Length: 69
Image (cartoon, rainbow, N blue to C red; front, side, top):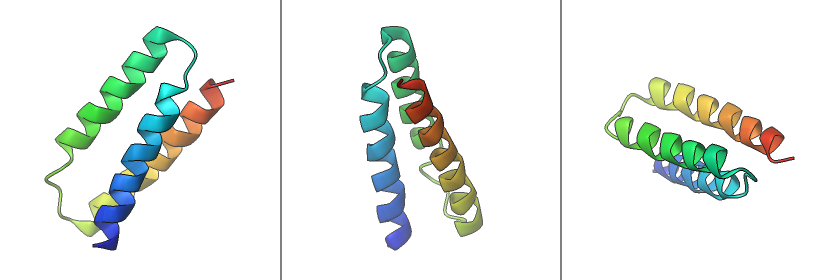
């Protein structure tokens, strides 16, 4: 259950940070990409794959934070 909570909190954090992007096109692309990726991977139950995808999400969060300024 902690994994589900971690994934959902990462999803919300990505969406929050993407909303802060200054350019409309980048903001809409990031939001669309985040939502599509999470929908596509929602049925994955392999913990190793989930762990890998959480790592990718953390990398993308850092990327969004760098783009904000």
